Image (cartoon, rainbow, N blue to C red; front, side, top):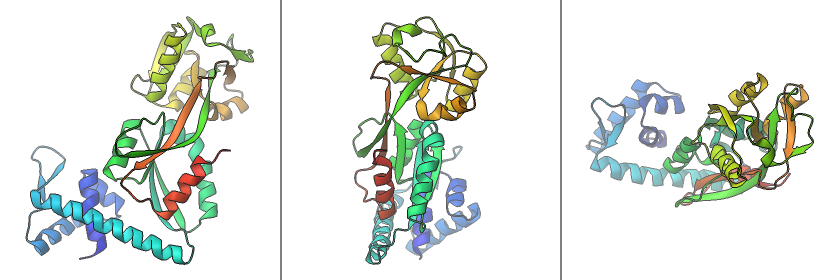
Amino acid sequence: MHIETLKIFCDLVDLQSFSLAAERNFITQSAVSQQIRSLEEKFKRKLLERVRGRREVKLTPAGEVFFRESKKVLTAYAELQESLRGLVGKIGGTVKVACTYSVGLHEMPQKVGEFMSKFPSARIDLEYSRTTKVVRDVMSGAVELGILAFPEPRRGLTIVPMPSDRMVLTCPPDHKLAKRAQIKTKDLTGINFVQFERDTPTRKATDKILKGAGVEVNKTAEFDNIETIKRAVEVGFGVAILPLAAVLDEERAGQLSIVKLAEKEWVRPVGVIYRSDRTLSLAAKKFVQLLEAQE
């Protein structure tokens, strides 16, 4: 039995998908099935049950024990690798990171590039997800780190603050507010407004600030990602409040205008999350240190 077989088994349980487990380990779905069968034959126990009519897999009582102990073996093996690398001062391995679109698309490429230049033997495996999935993947162990806006304290999670994002008003260059150097929240009363969907943390924070200022806007559209919001603002759906870093390229290209918001509360906290019971790999620790550094 190889350590890779234990990893495939744990990936299958974490991801609840033969196809995703195969993709993660660069093998076929049939190879995943074959590896599971070999484990069951070796230990003479049924470890998994397929749920009829559903895509998920279910652990048997023996499978639950095997999964728990396999996780310990994989953690110990990862720590062994890190300890050996540490002897020669080498940072290596792959760090799996899940990041929300609004943070990752505009802020992560530079950070990943900087990390790779410092530690060429290490690799960042970055995937983009919605906030709820980022948290779920970190808790399940599918990824080592999560990066998101408005990280909420949760049992079993450690939060490392990153530099916060300044929020700005974004509008078409010909909009009546475009020439203003700065506006107050109360100036947004009755204006056409493009927003994130209701369940996103940025939307909840925006609504709270507007409500606190007694401001009601005319909501013209709601979208689940920042790129669609920017396009909607460009074509005249209304204005939007977005992180400054996400709209700098469009401002330089003359597609959008940026107006400062006067109140200090227009700030979006960003953070890295990871499981509190997990010892981060040396590469992950270095990446977290890079992300939390003030620019």
